Length: 261
Image (cartoon, rainbow, N blue to C red; front, top):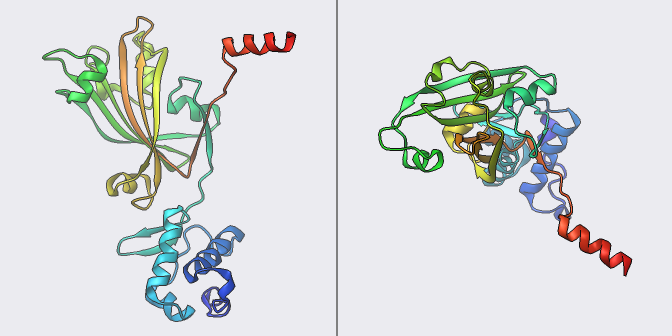
């Protein structure tokens, strides 16, 4: 690995800022397999001595790789090449559970329970679920993993009348709801960008501050009653969300009329 951090080449002023040159050199070593998932990088001080760069320059180059998810830093342990994560494409037009989605791909599913129980609702849960005075809410919080890789943190809230026993939920919440005849049939979902805080990043095995996707879903029964309010955080390096777009009916009709003209 010593030649990877040799000072040769950094004197090329036409190759861009020094931290970007170091960034590219490490990124290319990762892409080519020269640096493999789990490999550790030398400490910052050692990299600076090997390359002849300043510690500030080395730190900036490494931080850029951490931000892109190619490296991970573990406090007290060092800097490592991040595990390879297969990107998954999730269709936004289907109302499915995490378990069902992974099963269709032939992947195993694991859940790490963080908390589950009945509680007095928070104001946002009262609003989203339409709860009344004295109502309680079932909360489920867990890390969802597939083939041993943590992919998402799921925090679901449901009225106690819908889920009176949150401890009875195993692998799939929707399977429990379906057994009670209370599976949702439609949902409104909002997706926004988020930078993962220290606690969530630790649960997902990534570096704090990396990009993630925040997904908020409100699901409904056929009657229109709200059955579920879920706030999830997905790893930004693992998921692509896709949706099919079609021409609006009115626009389609107008386009046809123009052609006839």
